[in-house]
Amino acid sequence: MKGSDLLLAFYGDDFTGSTDAMEALANQGYRTVLFLEPPSGEMLAKFEGIRCIGVAGTSRAKSPAEMEKELRPVMERLSASGAPIVHYKTCSTFDSAPEVGSIGHAIRVSRPFFPNQRVVPLLVGAPALGRYTLFGNHFAKMKGDVYRLDRHPVMSRHPITPMDEADLRKHLSRQIDEPIGSMNILELEGAFDDVLAAYRSRLEGADTLLLLDVLDDERLSTSGGLLWETSREASQFVVGSSGIEYALVSYWRSRGMLGDTQAKSGIAAADRILAVSGSASPISRQQVETAIEQGFHGMKLTPAMIANDAEPPAAVLEEAVRRLSAGQDVVLYTALGPEDPDIEATRRLLSERGLRGNESGEFIGGQLGRWTKRIVQEAGLRRVVIAGGDTSGFVMKQLGGYGLEMLMPVSPGAPLCRMYSEDEAMDGLEIALKGGQFGSPDYFRKVKTSATP
Image (cartoon, rainbow, N blue to C red; front, side, top):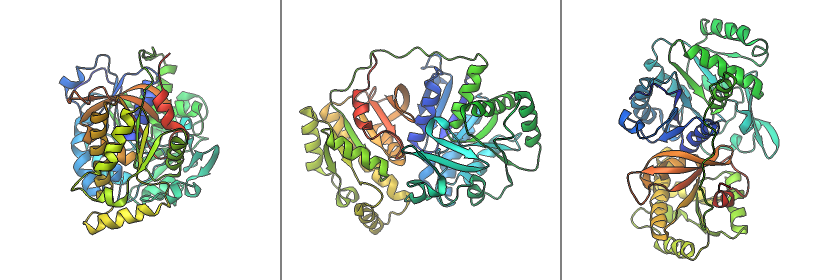
């Protein structure tokens, strides 16, 4: 796989995080296509003017052994893509654990493909998303307030990877035994050439991982410059959130490396829409409840329905198709918030079947994907929205898509996309994939009504 005009290649550890990175690039005119597998040169040739590529993965929901199996062939291909920077894209809240979605293990697996690079840069803050890193500690905004990560109402209570440590260096040290340094916010101030010289010296220091603070757009651009200028000497592996894309884009534009910002045309609002939520976050709960208040027909999928793979919930699917065919919007959901008792009931049923942890998440996502495909085909839909970072990846695979390209922004980190598929019935489907923490309360309706002037 070769793409001599590529500026960046990234792997996203879940689907919604991958679309977040794609949006940061595409919004500024750098044509980006997100694939399910590393694209061949023949496939890249289908997309004229492509500047960035991504591979949407599911490593955030996997054990270290499963991560290694998924990541090794992807990183081998991306490291040979010709892109100056290869990015392992994490969630903007860096949530992970030694036993699931380990960012430390992702670094161990990936770095052998970059044998000439001793220090791996880390950048997690993204001001556009309300994410900030100060003196190594990470903060996230929610409903207008900024919380230290270990006190965040959602992330401190995440059902799989609760964040009980705000210092990203300490958090990562639980996953990888390497010296982790940082360039703090004060070290990123001053003339760019001076900061770059200091950064180069840190790349020759004792630390093998180096975390960059992020507070505002100005210093984010500076960080983008540090990554870009050093990558021009040798292809570089970097780790962090879509803050890396925002940082690079800001620096590229400051240096006159402009993208094509001409807006896409001919995108009409949808006459009806299906929303599918496999997310248990409080934000997704509010979005489901708001959608129902706005006229969506709400249909909760019970634990028994989800855990039974012998037969689909025929009555539910038939009602969904009937209502959509009559012009009513529908939202299918598995839970309302992290305290929903159905979460534990579903886990118990799946555990009885021998499925635990990330296996359960993959099973649930697969179920939702199969049902979504059936409803889309039978109701003749052209637009859907999927809520849940892990859920989105598994649903996409069931829909048979091989790639995504952003059509238009809807909410930061959760754009409306076009799906590419070898299945003619699915090719061209308009789909929005959103993580549990993203989007306004009326996000589902916004997806439905999004259109170009």
